[in-house]
Length: 149
Ligand code: ZN
Image 1: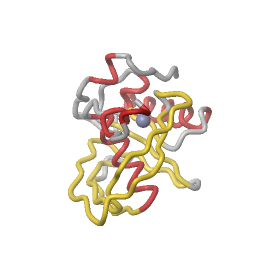
Image 2: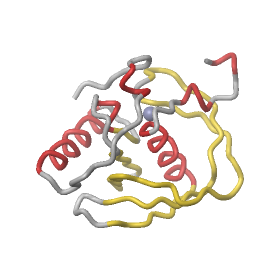
Image 3: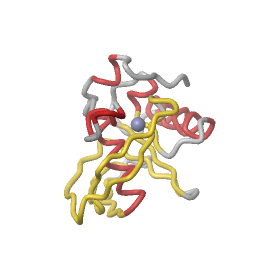
């Protein structure tokens, strides 16, 4: 799939709830997203980045794949950590962004099962980044360093 790049307006739209997470259509979309993420050596990908305004994002860190359908952040905790972050929709751009150290998120998985994921560190950062995409929020909105925008 082609990855949309900033400032494509689809990236700015709020994504819609997935009504039937186990439908063939959604499963196929997720498989295509996984292929796209891997072929671009990314860490995470949200459906709007491939032109679908649906609440789906995937993250793969150290060969562990997370599929989050209709994710809802339940809590953000710990100190905020400043670190360089990239995004497949902003090729070759890295911005310093503050994210919470820990996150608790509720989401539906590939099998239609609701789960709670508690994450910290890089996974917590990736979840916050990808869930932002579903709200139309991008790294340029989170960056406090004016000069790098
Ligand atoms: Zn991104």
